[in-house]
Structure formats: structure tokens, C-alpha cells
Image (cartoon, rainbow, N blue to C red; front, top):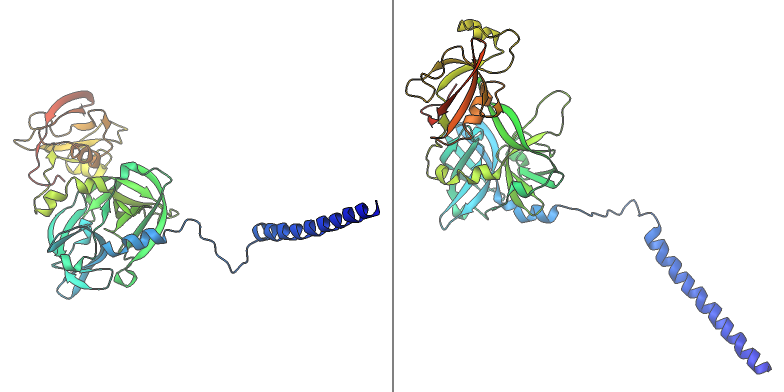
Length: 361
């Protein structure tokens, strides 16, 4: 009986000792995972480093010169690479000089040859030697990116000195309509359909790529909203707009735009209305006022001086930039219904759009 009790005592002691050591092991494990991390340790959960390394060699810096005078700086990206030639996409407004210098991610310089550009698309295509192009970008689809998805831009803010700078954020909006001007002239106001994102852009970022997290180009960075009290509103041209016109621009061909065939002023411009001796209904603040319908255009004999265009099809016209924006979305030969006021009376007419011979003012 005594021997049996001794055995039981030994077993209890062994059990107690085992439980003690197991408890210590469990406590150490819990302390490792539950105690606050050291201030000297950084845990990166969602780094874009892999994505950036994947694409950084396809981004270039662009400088333009007239003689020894630098006219502009910007960014671009290699979107196609052949046996001897490679092609760079950038903004049209970046190309403002007689000589174009392209610098790749390794710091090598070459001369870029302008193949084609269009001010309304704000896109331009350059040709460079294939040997100068480390790699070509993968073009994605902006339509597949959702609001709230992570995006990042690579470019040369404020010049080549900061080439390869990365900024990241989220896609803030799609199908945004923003108003800009061509050649910096208020008389050439133009609307653009763009992607909105909150990654910072600076002068020199123009023309650079906007990427999704997979390193696919979904847009071409073009501008930011500069307004007191406003931060984090940057915009990019959807890559689909570029893809649809790349072939023509590569061949140096002009983009053929449709036109209504009228010269116009804004309905809320009292100075211009007085200049052309046109009266509009009291209280009218929206619309595009016709100054003249060009001969041989679709609008000739259908619209006349003083008519106020208020809608095209079912789309409201706020000013002259809306007329151009709506019309330029159509093809040559398309028919549109113009709603307008003539001496205060609501009227409508159907007009066939013809090829634009020169940019409408």
C-alpha cells in the first residue's frame, strides 16, 4: 500500500513539473505575440515596392528645348518596343520645343522624335531607339479599377532631378468632367473625362503613368486641381483613350474630329454679348450663343446668330466647352438633335456632323 502511494506521489510531482514547464512555454509564446512591438521594428503589410520595381524601368523623363532654352519638362512611359524602335506616350502639353530629350531610368539620354500629337486628347507619341528602352509597359483597363483601389504614379516632379519619384493613393472617382484650357487660353476652354485620384502630382509628373497595384498602366497623369483650400485632387486620362488613338498618332496622322460648324460665346458673358450686339433672355446664365454658322457646315441654314444652344440630344449645355465636348464624342456623319432658344422661343433641329477643318473657338 505504501509503495502504491509512493508511485502516485512521484506521478503527481512529474505532472506538476511538466505542467510548470508547459505553462512557461505557453506564456513565452503569448508574450511574443501579444506584447507591443518594439519601436525599432517596422512591419510593412501592404508595400508597393514589388510593383514599383516591376515597372520603374519603363518610365522616362522628358525635356524640350528651343535652342539652349528649356521650354518644358514632363514624364512619359515606354508602351511598345520593337526590334529597332520603341514608343513613348506622354502629354501633348509636355511637348513644347524643337528638341526633345528623353532620359531613361538608368540616366541615359537620347533624342526623341515626335510622331504625332493631339491637343484635345492631350496625348503625344515619341519614337526612341529600342536599345535605349529597357522594357515596355503592360497596358491595363481603367474600367476594371474600382473607386477605393490603390493606385500609384511614377514621374519626374519639378524636373529630372527627382526622376523616378513614386506617389501613391486611391482611385477617388471615375468619369470626372474637368474644365481646362488649350494653350493656356481662356477662349479655348475644353472639357476632359478623367480619372480622379489622391496621389500627389507636381509639375513634371505630366505624361507619366498611373498604375494599378499589378503594375498595369490605367491612365496618363495630366493635371491636378489647383485651388485654395483643395488638396489631393489629381487627374489622369483613361488609358483606353490613348489605346483608341495610338495607331493614328504613331503614323503622324491627325485625329479627325466632328464639328457642329458654329462659332460661339458663353451665354453668361456680358462683355462678349455686347461686343457682338446679341441679346439673350433675362436671367439666362447657361448655354452657348451662336455668333455664326459656317458655310457648308451641318449647322448652316439651321442655326443663326443669337440662337442659344441649351441641349444636344439629352445632354445639357452649360457653355461653349460643353458643346465641343459633346460633339467630339461623336463620329463624322453622326446626327445630333440641337435644342436652342431663338428670341426666347424653344426650338430644335437635327444636324449632321461634318469633318472639322480647323479647331472651333
